[in-house]
Image 1 (cartoon, rainbow, N blue to C red):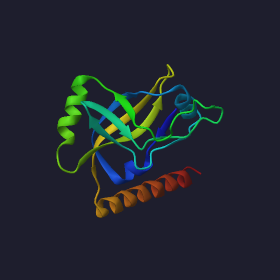
Image 2: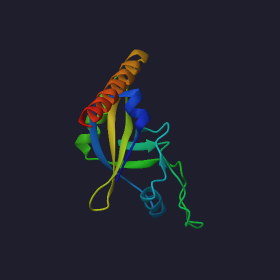
Image 3: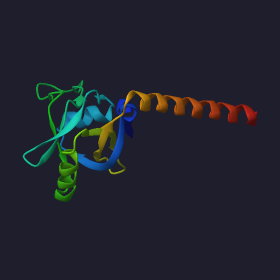
Image 4: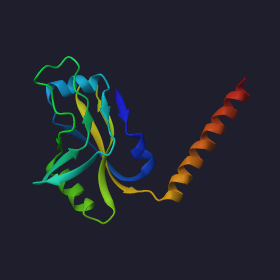
Length: 148
């Protein structure tokens, strides 16, 4: 199962991507498997040489009791030391940030999150992206009509 951060794909251009583990509680895992998450305004930051995910909203588990999790708590991302150093050094450059791009549940049932070192797009770049998507959609329509 894959859940994409569509706004990030539209608003940012990705420089480097990496797959990271994420530290979760039991009710968070159950809620993610139901697809109850939101990437809105989420980003990553460094604290004590560790990478943390902020504003990543995982809705409360509906069957959870008093032990339910806090939906907007900061979550630790699990990367190797080399990956952390690489991202930390590159993220210090002006205009670059680390954002979550996609949440993946792999074949083993493990939950991973794809993060990307990214740079914000300018308005004309966003318009160009929209134009390219429209052209692609039109081409797909023409191909379908031609096959009929």
